[in-house]
Length: 388
Image (cartoon, rainbow, N blue to C red; front, top):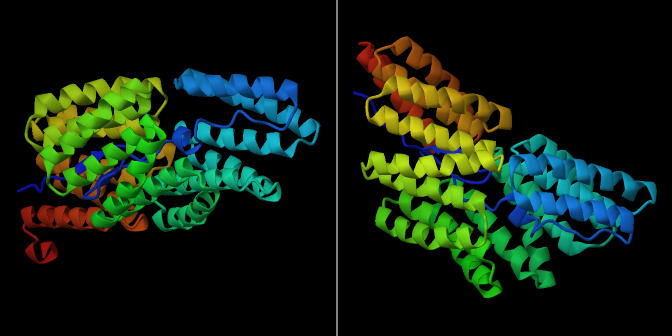
């Protein structure tokens, strides 16, 4: 007997989990609220900064790399004239690009340089934005308590300033943390505070993201049709807003629902729409998630070698972006394949690589699933006491 691994994923930068869902967290772009184009009154630097923002908003892997080059050029110009406002803005923007590219440690480096400048300048609105951005990176890295620390610094600032958009983003981000921690009702509470704020602002991108997040919770609670209802509200909003990253997330989520409902070919159709979008926008974490989900479908269909091909494409991406939670999921998925192929010792090797990672990121549901799968292997090997 093989216990089916509940493996899924979503999220710009959000991760794929085992037993606990990854949620449609706001992207770096959404958290940055478009990414600031405002420097501090240096025309030459501001021109270059604006060019970087335009490249960033194109949202392709190539344009993101070009945006970094423009931002670095602007940064040098701002520093030459001692323009700390422009410097802080540009540092934050570089962090946002690296976050979207999945280079989380690099993102943290730049956000951590921007934050003290924004505080020194007394710019509380932008301080709140950077705090939320840092929180999101920690969330993407599976460091949920650390993420909450930053979100809980950001939220009162946004509220004190009457910044409804910043408040909406941070509330949704906190919802994502609680969802990742398995506290579904708490997650819904935060999402349902965020959603009306996004709607009131006419922020279709933010509304779409939160609708997808709510759908994810209902999917995890077993209410698949309700989940589809939210996803089907979200998808056209993402498309209208030109948010290809968000569209990819929602397509992946719909695929996950159909997979859970046993409609495997339909699931593959949605995953196959999501994957090229994720590659186009340079979302390596999301790409890894969708590759893993495709592997899961093939595993469920009994095509274990095909499943391995997709898992083996996903695993190095997980490691490259530093997603320990996602790495744990993919290792466990590979273990399940080897178990199904009768290679029990090889299955144990992968489960035993996955287990400490699930513990390190506090994924108790994933830890429970992996322990159970190890027990099944020992049972099949005739080691009943060890299985118990």
